[in-house]
Length: 520
Image 1 (cartoon, rainbow, N blue to C red):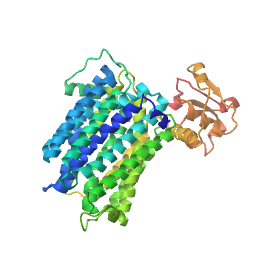
Image 2 (image 1 turned 120 degrees about the vertical axis):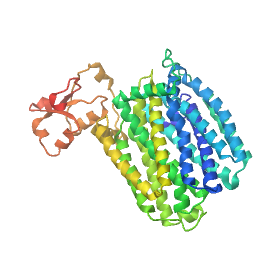
Image 3 (image 1 turned 45 degrees about the vertical axis):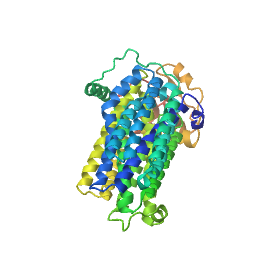
């Protein structure tokens, strides 16, 4: 399915537009980080690097609401084309900053790129359900996330090369302008979507529009849950990526190329994790992979914190082969790979669910509200980590704290997830691993809202299969004797079941709207 999407006009132009934009963002951020860390003298370069990430994210917090309203009010493809045209001028500011080796100008360019990205965010995710059917959303999101982090890989590699030894302004300018132009050209081929809410009045009062956006999101528990889960992913990603350069320099003694190599590992692994999430979903909205991914995030972060505890670089400027040839350097790479795979597995199901649950007339605003939460989480994390670094908290302790926080988050996600975890798990097992295909589901809808379905009960898997393929959770009528068996009781906790003594009750279930008192 993913390869088919990449050959269609309804998806491919957006894919490449996002790729080129993400490349430029990370090309600039990496060049700035390397200039600060390896070429500038001064105190607290680590805190300054973390602050740079917060400056890029801050526009998402203040402008996402307006971006969501614009995307719902006007044709999303047209808005994307105009934003990408403006981005060409922003790239010119970045070129000037690099030419002058001026950190303030580069910070200004980073902020402006953040402004364009904040306005583009509701479009790139809000437009997917306009051009893709629901079963394609997990694959579409996986490709967008994969493209984003492969662009991070490419941008960081080229950014590191461009800034090495002070950098070549001509090469930097050529890259920035070429990819800005490529992003604009790709946007020109995005198919029109029409207006989702043609009568919407855009509120340019930043505080008021943001407050209204968040109020609407908080009023919808299911969407709020999805937004918080997505925001947690971006918080973890922002913290890990901000800690990576000082980890390489101060703990492993590596140079710029080692930072680039580790970022390459991280970016490729994110793409692999996103693809794994799409494969596990098999065209359905399932959230249980997010829970398992949260546990993996916690375990890998804890191991990374334990591994680096007490470590300090004995030299500087070591190369990739020298760092990875050492046991600690290789283990750090493995932990980063595991963190990134878990991250891709974490984000794709949650964001696909948010898109599927949003109405077409306000989908971009829902995405924008989630972007505000993302920005709040990332900005708070960036500022918080910078303060902790300022007061001498070690990288090891920061990773240990991140690991514990992820394990707590995974437990909360499992406890509060709006879908049935058993149903999600069964869906993954039957569809992804056994490639189960179901035909004739439309006949269930024809039977009415309270359909009763009788199973032929060839095996005890009948009920599990039925639970896995239905969009609505059924009420099972199960034989009372069977319900008392020790191996059945744990499963009944995760389903709506009514024990009955009749044989017929044992082999049927209902899609009843009304709930039995025991099931409330």
